[in-house]
Image (cartoon, rainbow, N blue to C red):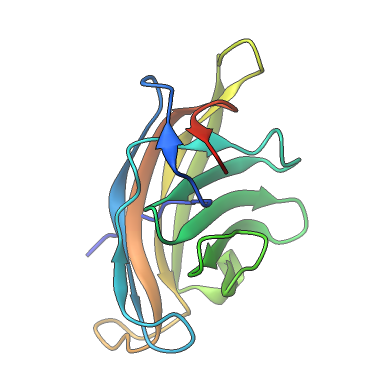
Length: 151
């Protein structure tokens, strides 16, 4: 089973109908709790936050997907909705599956936009035995710096 993950930040409204985010991230066990993350329909790139990647939100939780120069692809999850206070951080090396792509396309007047997606199973566990962690898959497109207001 392939899953997709989305990166989020605390957001309250969207304003750019050109950006999109779809998929689901499933969480189980401490410290995350048990929930499904289905991102709001929009996303924001990391240019204003000085990172390469995207922020996503489901209105409750925040997820950030980024390309870290030291650790490679990384997933940051904030169950409280504020990405400045992460609950967990998963680097690709922590996961049994972390397939991702991230590309830059033309964005708005504020800079380029990010598109891509990822499939994760974190932490590294044997198939069909996950009891703690996250797994899922998320796709995003045309995430620019104006896609999410209030975050």
